[in-house]
Length: 47
Image (tube, rainbow, N blue to C red; front, top):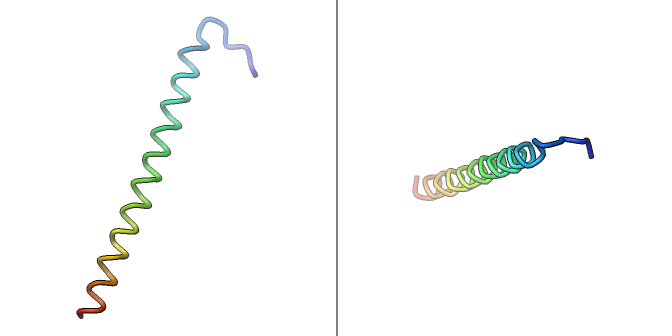
């Protein structure tokens, strides 16, 4: 690992937060896609 010196905690925390936010965005996108797919199937059956 690269030497981060006295800023190691701050840099690693920033990476951690960024990764968590990206995971959250992907999860939200997948959930919205599944929800829209269910709604579309519901409308097609009753259509």
